Length: 284
Ligand SMILES: [Zn+2]
Image 1 (cartoon, rainbow, N blue to C red):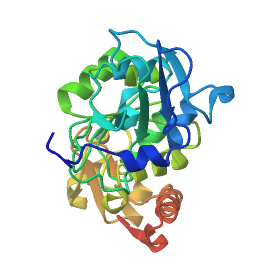
Image 2 (tube, rainbow, N blue to C red):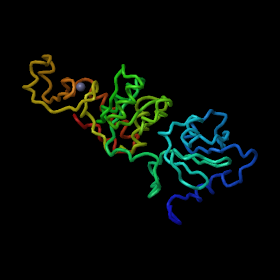
Image 3 (cartoon, rainbow, N blue to C red):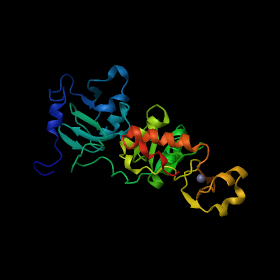
C-alpha cells in the first residue's frame, strides 16, 4: 500500500474508546471491538466493551469474528491495528481488531472491500422460515427464491449458483463460505423485515409493486381478457378488464378483493422507507 494510501483508519480507531490504549494483560490475547448493530450478535452481558479472545496463530480474522457470533456477511470493514485487512488476515498476539457493519450511507471511497460489490438489482434466496418476507418482497417486485421444502444446503447452493443474496435468521447459514452476500434478518413482522432489507441494500427506489407472482415469484405480463376468458369465474369476468399472467406458474392476477389490503401494505413499506406514501396505486 502506498504512503498515505487509503488503507489507514487511525482517525476511526483513535475515536474508538479503549482502542487507543496499549493492550494490557496477557499478550496471548486479541481484542475485538464490534461496532453498531454488530453488537446485537453478542450475548447481552458482553455488549458495550471490547471482547477478548485467546490468540491462536492459525486463526483468521473471519474465524475470530465468527467465533464471537457475527456472520461474515454482516461485516463490511475490518481494521487491525489501523490497517484495513481482509478476512484471511491472521492477527498477531495483542492485536486490536475493529469490526464494522455494512455502511449503506457512508462512502468508503477507495478502501478495499471485504465482499464483491453488491449486485445493482439483487435477487434473493430466503430461508424456509421467511415465507412471509419472501411473499412481501415479491409483492414489491423483487425476485425471491423461496420454497417451504428448500433446505439450507439447497438454499446456499442456489444462492451461489444464481448469485442471490441469502436472507436468513440463521447465523450458521451466513457463516458458510458459499454465501457471498447475505442479510441477517432480525425477528419482527414481515413489513419491518422488508424495510430493513431494503434499507440495508438501498433498494427503496427500486420497488415495482404488483409485477410478480406471490406464489412462485415469476414475472407477470399483461394479458388480453379474451385470452383468459374461459378461466374466469362469472363475477370476475363481469367486473374486471385488466389481467396479468405469471410467466412461471400461469396463474392469473387481477385487482380483486385482496388488492386494497396489498396496496395498503405497499404504502406502509414506502412510508417507512421515507418515500412517497402516495405510491399505493401502482399496478392497479
Ligand atoms: Zn407464479
